[in-house]
Length: 72
Length: 230
Image 1 (cartoon, chains in turn blue, green):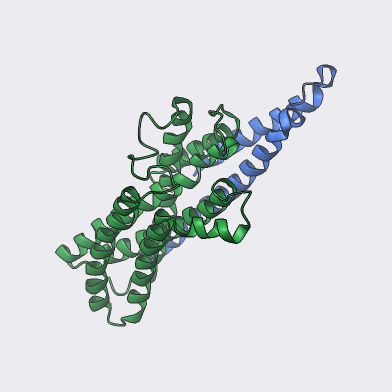
Image 2: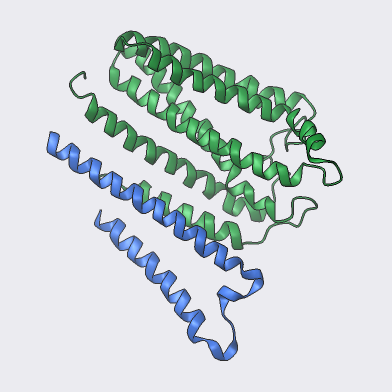
């Protein structure tokens, strides 16, 4: 379980650095989220939904594991 | 969460699918344009459904050999999640086809007529209905052992009917769907672009692992629920 926590923390921090990078780099106007037909916005939305669903699944998994341990 | 490496693999592959699936290069094709990216989502639903139904029928046969109710629970839950993925595949296919097959010069109703005659759609609908009937059959028998036995046999029939309805008949008849009359679309090495295979195969594995993950949760829950009987 701890692995999953580390992994999700890693992914979230990676995403955050991506966003920060886009915001601080104003000199060159190379903001990824606004370029190229803004497909990155869609990717961000979809990835957020996916990670939300997956986290939900992880939580369910944890809950069921706990119930299993209590019963036996 | 014991033995969870495959769950992590599932998360990574799905994230890769969603990021790579939107951002990586795809071939420019007429009519399809960017919708070609649906290959990573729509097609994977059917792959996942097929794999889950296969596991389900394996457990059905195991039940018939062993008479253990756990095998029946496994079989049922794999079929249930397989149905979910099948419905998702059908629904996503509906959206995709209404923007690629429907004739823009035709009034919507007439082009709907062309689409509704599509053998692949009818076949997939029949296959899914057969599995819906599996669920109805399960819930209509109250005796547990009888239910397990009858539905295990029905599961084998339902699985056998998958092949003519979604694999054979759409291949024989002319069809707008890829892989009518000339082979297998997604797995044909001449048909799918190399760049797309880079995302497509991991996507199939990721979605399948997701299906197995959900199923494993459902199985564990119903094993807890049925503990008195087992």
